[in-house]
Amino acid sequence: MIQILTKHRRTSVRLAVPLLITTLLMLTAACVPGESPDATEPPLDPEEVTDPTPAAVNGNGESPAIPLEPESDGGTSPGQSLKSTPGNIWAETLIEGNLVTISREVATMEDHVHFEVPANGGTAAFLGYFIEGRFYAQAVFCPNCGATSIAWAEDALSCGECGATFELISGQGRDGALDYPSGRISHAIVGNTITMPLDDLIEAYSRTASGEDTLFEIISVGGGGGGGGCRGCG
Ligand SMILES: [Zn+2]
Image (cartoon, rainbow, N blue to C red; front, side, top):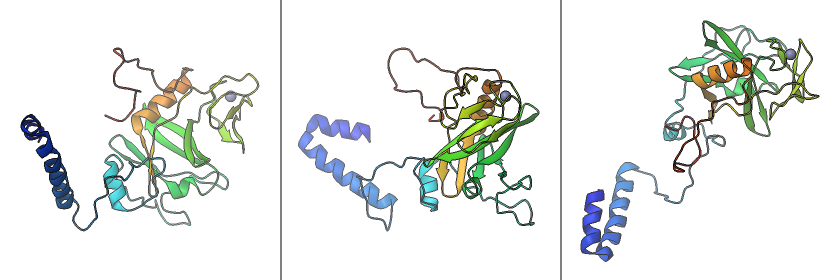
């Protein structure tokens, strides 16, 4: 393709441009039968994707639609864990490879959701919540005292052990309490699923537990190329 276009460009630029357009139109028509091509359609932001159709899922390429099965009956919704108690909804985690998926429906049943993943022979628990349409998750591990008793407190997270409270979005400790590491766990929201990389969750939890400043190691790229470090893009 590139070689062909290069050859055309050498011989005749005027010829190459209409050829390119014709080729693109033919390719578009061949690849998407029954759909009108729309070259100006903007790329989908995973944060904003709400279309539950398989096309949106496949178009993302990294967020397979995993059917969320109820663990059993007993009044729980699909994707909801039996660990749920009034005021504390737990979501089942479905793990496929490095992808952890929870049900968005379960995550929004109340103002926050609990979930946990296997980590280092044990489990790492998280609190997830939506603030102004954006999803956040924090390790259930107090960065101030090390207790594993972080609870939802309406407009903050609070530690049941030392009483420290933390901002929901920034994770900053109030009244001088030590902060959560800065950063945000990457995720994709597609249809009824919220998907997060398992190794990111484990890293975020362990770096919270060890009192790091950031959720993820900052990798500085020399040479000035490439743009911002996009985790999970490659
Ligand atoms: Zn604490």
